[in-house]
Length: 272
Image (cartoon, rainbow, N blue to C red; front, side, top):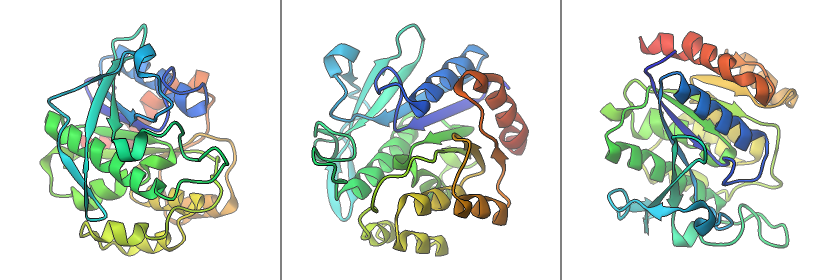
């Protein structure tokens, strides 16, 4: 599969994040898919633990400056960019002083889950999707990684359903068996409804724990990739019940051509 526009949106990407299954998978997939002739864009959060000087992040003036409404509050969007060493790939970083300046990712120094992680996920979702619109770049495929990307499929299918930029976009979601403790703020349901979204599947967010977020995300996705060998029965049952298109787990060093074939067979055919 070549000549497609593929948007990767991830919580992690090496070397900006530590080496882990997500960060290494995204790195390998993006480099390979570009090498065979696809047009690649990458977005991730600009967490405060990312060293801007070391990685040479700088602001993209033409994309920064808009305000995103989160829970009826205006939050300024800042976009930064850096390059992946040894690759002709740029990475766009979604930033906001309120949500991403803190020197932590999802938890405070005592291990407590941040109470505004729900809003951080919403801001990240809107920041990515609005930035892509501003670029006037129409992705054929959006491949997402990490729970902070949970709401992207919902917003593509509901909030942006009439937007020509996303009209034919197919969403691939990589899922992982790496749950966080506790839940998102339960007000997330009302915050999403403030955007005029009324899907019956919002009921899953009445208890927004990790596995309900996975189920919610999968429902609005077009295809699923398993990033781990095993998942709880509730996830396997949900996949089977909803007849989701699924690629089984492959180790990171095996994903290149496997992902290419999966995009082609289960996503690209629907585009063409």
